[in-house]
Structure formats: C-alpha cells, structure tokens
Image 1 (spheres, helix red, strand yellow):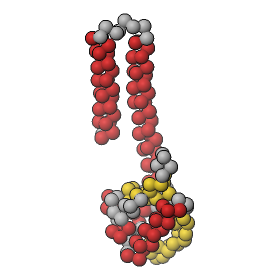
Image 2: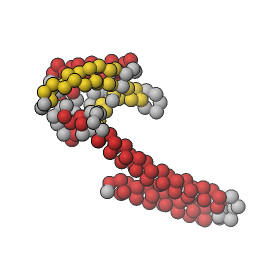
Image 3: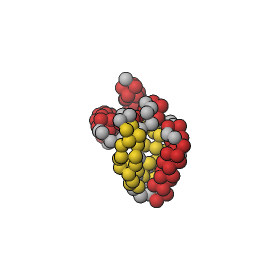
Image 4: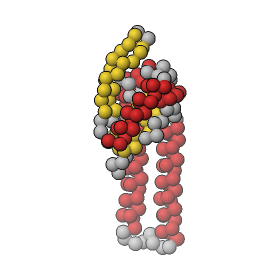
Length: 166
C-alpha cells in the first residue's frame, strides 16, 4: 500500500510538472515554436518510462526479497558501524530473535559477549581489507551444535567505497 501511495505521489508530481511547463510555454507564447512539441513529448516519454521502471524495480525487489527470505542460508546486512540493516528468516535462528528485533541492533545486543566481539572484529577486518572472510563456525541450536561456513564480504556503494558487510 505504501509503495502504491509513493508511486501515485510521484506520478502526480510529474503531471504537475508537465502542466506547469505547458502553462509557462503558453503564457510566453512559445507553443507555436516548431520544436516545443517535441520537447514536451520527450518529457512525457521520460515520465512514462520512469513510472514503468519504478514498477519493474518494485517487482524485482519483491522477487529478490522472496528468494533471500526462503533460501536455507542465514543472510544479513550490517552497516559499517555494525548495525544490522536487514536479515532473512534463516538468520533469526542464530540470535533467536525476530527480524523486527534484529534490524537496528548490534552484535552485543544479539549475541553473547565473546561472539559479539569476534563478529565485530571480523566485520572490521572485512571493511579494512575489502576482502572476503570465510571461516567455519560452531553454533548452538535447539538440536545441538551445528557447524557451518560463515562468509563475510564487503558491500560497495556505486562510487566503490565499502559501506556495509554481508
């Protein structure tokens, strides 16, 4: 519902822009210029393509979210400050907390002190080296101890700067 409202507001803003541009052109007697209609058509096409791209983006985001949430691997994203930004359903089993409790928390709030310190040190190693860190870890579960491979890697911004750990 929230995305539909956001898209609706963007569409309304674009339409108001197009109408405003048309009124300015009309008031200044520029509508009889031969290329002005091509310019207006280009603006309308830009707006329509942006709306279509936005809907494609939302659909792709939903598909990717479903995949991440249903694969059997624990996935999380932490900011460079060590704050959990998101996690999937499988990750909830590690700290034994729901996603709503995980988002915005740090390792000390989710794990015992020893594990929290080690996780943060590992995050810092990944952030500083900008390299993948892979190691085997023993985790206590309701069915006993479980060994799994933990793989941390840097997430980059469009400018190439490392901004998070996954």
